[in-house]
Image (cartoon, rainbow over all chains, first blue to last red; front, side):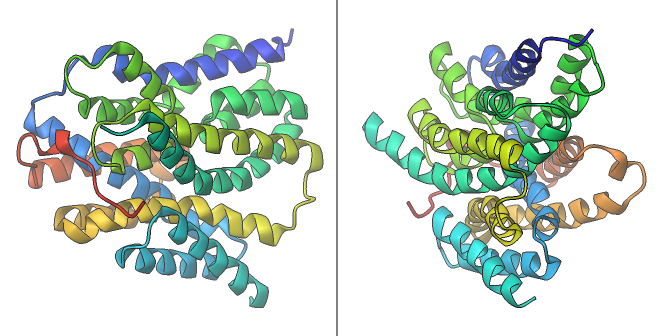
Amino acid sequence: MKINVYLYIFVMAFATWLMRVAASLIMKKPVRNRFFQSFLYYVPYVTLAVMTFPAIVEATQSPIAGAAALIVCITAAWFGQGLFPVAVLGCATVLILEFFL
Amino acid sequence: MEKGRDVFMQGYRHGIPIGLGYFAVAFSLGIAARDYGFSALQGFFASLITYASAGQYMGFALYATNTTLAELVLLMFIINARYILMGFALNQRMPEGTPLSTRLLVGSCITDEIFGITIARPGIPTPYYTFGALIAAVPMWALGTALGISMGNILPARIVSALSVALFGMFIAVIIPPARRDKAVLGAVAVSFALSYASVRLPVISGLSQGNRTILLTVIIASVFAALFPRETGEASEGGEVYED
Protein backbone atom coordinates (compact mmCIF):
# COMPACT_ATOMS: atom_id res chain seq x y z
CA MET A 1 0.00 0.00 0.00
CA LYS A 2 1.29 3.45 -0.89
CA ILE A 3 2.16 5.78 1.98
CA ASN A 4 0.05 8.95 2.19
CA VAL A 5 1.96 11.48 0.09
CA TYR A 6 1.61 14.34 2.57
CA LEU A 7 2.86 12.16 5.44
CA TYR A 8 5.77 11.16 3.21
CA ILE A 9 6.59 14.81 2.44
CA PHE A 10 6.37 15.75 6.10
CA VAL A 11 8.75 12.95 7.14
CA MET A 12 11.18 13.97 4.37
CA ALA A 13 11.14 17.58 5.60
CA PHE A 14 11.48 16.61 9.27
CA ALA A 15 14.43 14.27 8.67
CA THR A 16 16.15 17.02 6.66
CA TRP A 17 15.48 19.57 9.40
CA LEU A 18 17.01 17.26 12.05
CA MET A 19 20.30 17.31 10.10
CA ARG A 20 20.19 21.12 10.02
CA VAL A 21 19.75 21.52 13.77
CA ALA A 22 21.81 18.52 14.96
CA ALA A 23 24.83 20.71 15.74
CA SER A 24 22.65 23.37 17.40
CA LEU A 25 21.30 20.72 19.77
CA ILE A 26 24.76 19.42 20.69
CA MET A 27 27.01 22.49 20.82
CA LYS A 28 26.86 24.79 23.83
CA LYS A 29 30.05 26.81 23.21
CA PRO A 30 32.78 27.11 20.57
CA VAL A 31 35.17 24.17 20.44
CA ARG A 32 38.71 25.18 21.50
CA ASN A 33 40.53 22.35 19.72
CA ARG A 34 42.87 23.91 17.16
CA PHE A 35 42.49 21.20 14.53
CA PHE A 36 38.69 21.30 14.76
CA GLN A 37 38.70 25.11 14.50
CA SER A 38 40.97 24.98 11.46
CA PHE A 39 38.86 22.22 9.91
CA LEU A 40 35.69 24.30 10.29
CA TYR A 41 37.48 27.34 8.87
CA TYR A 42 38.19 25.49 5.62
CA VAL A 43 34.83 23.64 5.40
CA PRO A 44 32.71 26.37 3.73
CA TYR A 45 35.28 27.24 1.07
CA VAL A 46 35.93 23.61 0.21
CA THR A 47 32.23 22.70 0.14
CA LEU A 48 31.26 25.61 -2.09
CA ALA A 49 34.25 25.06 -4.40
CA VAL A 50 33.42 21.36 -4.77
CA MET A 51 29.79 22.17 -5.53
CA THR A 52 30.70 24.87 -8.08
CA PHE A 53 33.11 22.97 -10.31
CA PRO A 54 32.54 21.11 -12.56
CA ALA A 55 28.78 21.59 -11.92
CA ILE A 56 28.74 25.12 -13.41
CA VAL A 57 30.05 23.75 -16.72
CA GLU A 58 27.42 21.00 -16.72
CA ALA A 59 24.49 23.24 -15.74
CA THR A 60 24.44 25.24 -18.95
CA GLN A 61 23.32 23.99 -22.37
CA SER A 62 26.75 24.72 -23.80
CA PRO A 63 29.75 23.75 -21.63
CA ILE A 64 31.73 26.61 -23.23
CA ALA A 65 29.20 29.15 -21.91
CA GLY A 66 29.44 27.60 -18.43
CA ALA A 67 33.24 27.71 -18.51
CA ALA A 68 33.17 31.33 -19.67
CA ALA A 69 30.75 32.21 -16.86
CA LEU A 70 33.13 30.56 -14.37
CA ILE A 71 36.02 32.71 -15.56
CA VAL A 72 33.94 35.90 -15.66
CA CYS A 73 32.62 35.28 -12.12
CA ILE A 74 36.06 34.50 -10.67
CA THR A 75 37.52 37.64 -12.29
CA ALA A 76 34.67 39.87 -11.08
CA ALA A 77 34.85 38.46 -7.52
CA TRP A 78 38.65 38.78 -7.50
CA PHE A 79 38.30 42.48 -8.24
CA GLY A 80 35.87 42.97 -5.41
CA GLN A 81 32.38 42.67 -6.93
CA GLY A 82 29.67 41.51 -4.47
CA LEU A 83 27.26 38.57 -4.53
CA PHE A 84 24.57 40.03 -6.72
CA PRO A 85 26.77 41.66 -9.44
CA VAL A 86 28.82 38.46 -9.79
CA ALA A 87 25.67 36.33 -10.11
CA VAL A 88 24.18 38.69 -12.72
CA LEU A 89 27.43 38.83 -14.72
CA GLY A 90 27.49 35.02 -14.79
CA CYS A 91 23.88 34.82 -16.06
CA ALA A 92 24.51 37.53 -18.67
CA THR A 93 27.62 35.72 -19.94
CA VAL A 94 25.66 32.51 -20.52
CA LEU A 95 22.68 34.29 -22.06
CA ILE A 96 24.85 36.20 -24.54
CA LEU A 97 27.20 33.32 -25.42
CA GLU A 98 24.42 30.77 -25.92
CA PHE A 99 22.79 33.18 -28.33
CA PHE A 100 25.77 32.64 -30.62
CA LEU A 101 26.87 29.09 -29.77
CA MET B 1 24.38 47.17 17.71
CA GLU B 2 22.93 46.05 14.40
CA LYS B 3 19.23 46.71 13.94
CA GLY B 4 17.29 43.49 13.41
CA ARG B 5 15.25 44.95 10.59
CA ASP B 6 18.32 46.16 8.66
CA VAL B 7 20.04 42.81 9.04
CA PHE B 8 16.87 41.07 7.88
CA MET B 9 16.73 43.30 4.79
CA GLN B 10 20.41 42.63 4.07
CA GLY B 11 19.71 38.90 4.26
CA TYR B 12 16.71 39.38 1.99
CA ARG B 13 18.83 41.21 -0.63
CA HIS B 14 21.49 38.53 -0.53
CA GLY B 15 18.78 35.89 -0.82
CA ILE B 16 17.51 37.23 -4.16
CA PRO B 17 20.30 35.86 -6.41
CA ILE B 18 20.02 32.61 -4.47
CA GLY B 19 16.29 32.57 -5.21
CA LEU B 20 16.93 33.11 -8.94
CA GLY B 21 19.28 30.15 -9.00
CA TYR B 22 16.82 28.10 -6.96
CA PHE B 23 14.02 28.89 -9.38
CA ALA B 24 15.98 27.45 -12.29
CA VAL B 25 17.08 24.34 -10.39
CA ALA B 26 13.61 23.82 -8.88
CA PHE B 27 12.08 23.99 -12.33
CA SER B 28 14.07 20.94 -13.41
CA LEU B 29 13.33 19.30 -10.04
CA GLY B 30 9.63 19.86 -10.78
CA ILE B 31 9.92 18.18 -14.17
CA ALA B 32 11.39 15.13 -12.40
CA ALA B 33 8.79 15.25 -9.60
CA ARG B 34 5.97 15.09 -12.13
CA ASP B 35 7.44 11.88 -13.55
CA TYR B 36 7.42 10.42 -10.02
CA GLY B 37 3.73 11.24 -9.65
CA PHE B 38 3.68 14.43 -7.59
CA SER B 39 1.06 17.14 -8.20
CA ALA B 40 2.02 20.83 -8.40
CA LEU B 41 0.49 21.45 -4.96
CA GLN B 42 2.38 18.53 -3.41
CA GLY B 43 5.62 19.67 -5.03
CA PHE B 44 5.09 23.25 -3.81
CA PHE B 45 4.43 22.05 -0.26
CA ALA B 46 7.39 19.65 -0.29
CA SER B 47 9.81 22.34 -1.49
CA LEU B 48 8.44 24.95 0.92
CA ILE B 49 9.10 22.83 4.01
CA THR B 50 12.09 20.73 2.88
CA TYR B 51 14.15 23.17 0.74
CA ALA B 52 16.91 20.67 0.02
CA SER B 53 17.81 20.04 -3.60
CA ALA B 54 19.61 16.70 -3.69
CA GLY B 55 17.51 15.38 -0.80
CA GLN B 56 14.26 16.18 -2.59
CA TYR B 57 15.38 14.63 -5.85
CA MET B 58 16.14 11.42 -3.99
CA GLY B 59 12.99 11.65 -1.87
CA PHE B 60 10.74 12.09 -4.90
CA ALA B 61 12.44 9.25 -6.77
CA LEU B 62 12.19 6.94 -3.78
CA TYR B 63 8.45 7.58 -3.39
CA ALA B 64 7.86 6.12 -6.82
CA THR B 65 9.45 2.85 -5.68
CA ASN B 66 6.98 2.20 -2.81
CA THR B 67 9.58 2.67 -0.12
CA THR B 68 9.11 2.63 3.66
CA LEU B 69 9.32 5.72 5.88
CA ALA B 70 12.32 4.21 7.70
CA GLU B 71 14.22 3.95 4.42
CA LEU B 72 13.25 7.52 3.59
CA VAL B 73 14.58 8.82 6.94
CA LEU B 74 17.83 6.89 6.56
CA LEU B 75 18.36 8.22 3.05
CA MET B 76 17.66 11.81 4.14
CA PHE B 77 20.17 11.44 7.00
CA ILE B 78 22.87 10.25 4.60
CA ILE B 79 22.24 12.64 1.75
CA ASN B 80 21.90 15.69 4.02
CA ALA B 81 24.78 14.82 6.35
CA ARG B 82 26.72 17.86 5.13
CA TYR B 83 24.17 20.04 6.95
CA ILE B 84 25.57 18.68 10.23
CA LEU B 85 29.02 20.01 9.32
CA MET B 86 27.55 23.34 8.31
CA GLY B 87 25.65 23.49 11.60
CA PHE B 88 28.89 22.92 13.50
CA ALA B 89 30.64 25.68 11.55
CA LEU B 90 27.82 28.16 12.35
CA ASN B 91 27.53 27.19 16.03
CA GLN B 92 31.31 27.46 16.39
CA ARG B 93 30.87 31.19 15.74
CA MET B 94 28.25 31.62 18.46
CA PRO B 95 29.52 32.49 21.96
CA GLU B 96 28.78 30.39 25.02
CA GLY B 97 25.40 31.33 26.44
CA THR B 98 23.75 31.82 23.05
CA PRO B 99 20.12 30.73 23.63
CA LEU B 100 19.12 27.37 22.18
CA SER B 101 16.29 29.15 20.35
CA THR B 102 18.80 31.31 18.45
CA ARG B 103 20.91 28.27 17.60
CA LEU B 104 17.85 26.35 16.39
CA LEU B 105 16.55 29.25 14.30
CA VAL B 106 19.90 29.77 12.56
CA GLY B 107 20.28 26.00 12.03
CA SER B 108 16.78 25.71 10.57
CA CYS B 109 17.76 28.09 7.76
CA ILE B 110 20.71 25.98 6.56
CA THR B 111 20.87 25.30 2.86
CA ASP B 112 24.17 25.04 0.97
CA GLU B 113 23.75 28.58 -0.29
CA ILE B 114 22.37 30.31 2.81
CA PHE B 115 25.08 28.66 4.87
CA GLY B 116 27.63 30.01 2.39
CA ILE B 117 26.56 33.63 2.68
CA THR B 118 25.99 33.40 6.45
CA ILE B 119 29.47 32.03 7.18
CA ALA B 120 30.96 34.67 4.89
CA ARG B 121 29.23 37.46 6.78
CA PRO B 122 31.30 39.10 9.52
CA GLY B 123 30.29 38.65 13.15
CA ILE B 124 28.03 36.21 14.95
CA PRO B 125 25.45 34.38 12.79
CA THR B 126 22.00 35.82 13.47
CA PRO B 127 18.53 34.48 12.66
CA TYR B 128 17.55 37.92 11.29
CA TYR B 129 20.04 37.51 8.45
CA THR B 130 19.36 33.83 7.78
CA PHE B 131 15.58 34.30 7.80
CA GLY B 132 15.86 37.30 5.47
CA ALA B 133 17.72 35.10 3.01
CA LEU B 134 15.37 32.16 3.56
CA ILE B 135 12.26 34.26 2.94
CA ALA B 136 13.73 35.63 -0.30
CA ALA B 137 14.93 32.27 -1.59
CA VAL B 138 12.61 29.46 -0.49
CA PRO B 139 9.37 30.76 -2.10
CA MET B 140 11.28 30.83 -5.41
CA TRP B 141 12.33 27.25 -4.79
CA ALA B 142 8.73 26.20 -4.09
CA LEU B 143 7.34 28.22 -7.00
CA GLY B 144 9.92 26.80 -9.40
CA THR B 145 9.03 23.26 -8.33
CA ALA B 146 5.30 23.83 -8.80
CA LEU B 147 5.81 25.47 -12.22
CA GLY B 148 8.15 22.69 -13.30
CA ILE B 149 5.48 20.13 -12.43
CA SER B 150 2.55 22.00 -13.99
CA MET B 151 4.19 23.56 -17.06
CA GLY B 152 7.13 21.30 -17.89
CA ASN B 153 9.15 22.90 -20.61
CA ILE B 154 7.27 26.16 -21.13
CA LEU B 155 10.21 28.33 -20.02
CA PRO B 156 12.75 28.63 -22.88
CA ALA B 157 15.72 26.35 -22.23
CA ARG B 158 18.10 29.29 -22.80
CA ILE B 159 16.57 31.20 -19.89
CA VAL B 160 16.73 28.20 -17.55
CA SER B 161 20.33 27.66 -18.65
CA ALA B 162 21.33 31.25 -17.85
CA LEU B 163 19.47 31.32 -14.51
CA SER B 164 21.09 28.10 -13.36
CA VAL B 165 24.47 29.90 -13.26
CA ALA B 166 23.26 32.51 -10.71
CA LEU B 167 23.74 30.06 -7.87
CA PHE B 168 27.32 29.23 -8.82
CA GLY B 169 28.15 32.90 -9.40
CA MET B 170 27.15 33.50 -5.82
CA PHE B 171 29.29 30.66 -4.50
CA ILE B 172 32.24 32.12 -6.39
CA ALA B 173 31.60 35.57 -4.90
CA VAL B 174 31.73 33.98 -1.45
CA ILE B 175 34.95 31.98 -1.87
CA ILE B 176 37.15 34.21 -4.05
CA PRO B 177 37.69 37.33 -1.85
CA PRO B 178 39.01 35.26 1.13
CA ALA B 179 41.06 33.17 -1.32
CA ARG B 180 42.69 36.36 -2.55
CA ARG B 181 43.67 37.36 1.00
CA ASP B 182 44.65 33.94 2.37
CA LYS B 183 46.97 31.72 0.31
CA ALA B 184 45.86 28.62 2.24
CA VAL B 185 42.22 29.24 1.24
CA LEU B 186 43.32 29.81 -2.35
CA GLY B 187 45.12 26.47 -2.25
CA ALA B 188 42.10 24.74 -0.72
CA VAL B 189 39.81 26.15 -3.44
CA ALA B 190 42.20 25.09 -6.23
CA VAL B 191 42.56 21.57 -4.80
CA SER B 192 38.77 21.36 -4.37
CA PHE B 193 38.16 22.28 -8.00
CA ALA B 194 40.72 19.72 -9.19
CA LEU B 195 39.56 16.83 -6.96
CA SER B 196 35.91 17.59 -7.61
CA TYR B 197 36.58 17.42 -11.34
CA ALA B 198 38.52 14.18 -10.91
CA SER B 199 35.90 12.59 -8.63
CA VAL B 200 33.22 12.78 -11.32
CA ARG B 201 35.43 10.57 -13.48
CA LEU B 202 37.11 8.24 -10.98
CA PRO B 203 35.67 4.76 -10.44
CA VAL B 204 33.80 4.08 -7.15
CA ILE B 205 33.68 7.77 -6.12
CA SER B 206 31.80 8.75 -9.27
CA GLY B 207 29.19 6.14 -8.29
CA LEU B 208 28.31 8.10 -5.14
CA SER B 209 25.53 10.67 -5.17
CA GLN B 210 26.61 14.28 -5.61
CA GLY B 211 25.76 15.08 -1.99
CA ASN B 212 27.91 12.23 -0.69
CA ARG B 213 30.81 13.11 -2.99
CA THR B 214 30.61 16.67 -1.68
CA ILE B 215 30.76 15.63 1.97
CA LEU B 216 33.53 13.07 1.37
CA LEU B 217 35.71 15.59 -0.47
CA THR B 218 34.94 18.29 2.11
CA VAL B 219 36.03 16.12 5.05
CA ILE B 220 39.22 14.97 3.28
CA ILE B 221 40.35 18.33 1.87
CA ALA B 222 39.43 20.42 4.94
CA SER B 223 41.19 17.89 7.24
CA VAL B 224 44.38 17.93 5.17
CA PHE B 225 44.45 21.73 5.08
CA ALA B 226 43.65 21.95 8.81
CA ALA B 227 46.63 19.64 9.50
CA LEU B 228 49.04 21.36 7.09
CA PHE B 229 47.94 24.97 7.58
CA PRO B 230 46.33 25.24 11.04
CA ARG B 231 44.76 28.51 12.07
CA GLU B 232 45.88 30.58 15.03
CA THR B 233 43.66 29.58 17.96
CA GLY B 234 40.63 31.83 18.26
CA GLU B 235 40.81 33.08 14.72
CA ALA B 236 38.20 30.67 13.41
CA SER B 237 35.62 31.77 15.96
CA GLU B 238 36.04 35.40 14.95
CA GLY B 239 35.70 34.32 11.33
CA GLY B 240 33.78 36.40 8.91
CA GLU B 241 35.02 37.81 5.67
CA VAL B 242 34.07 41.31 4.72
CA TYR B 243 32.51 41.50 1.31
CA GLU B 244 30.76 44.25 -0.54
CA ASP B 245 27.20 44.76 0.70
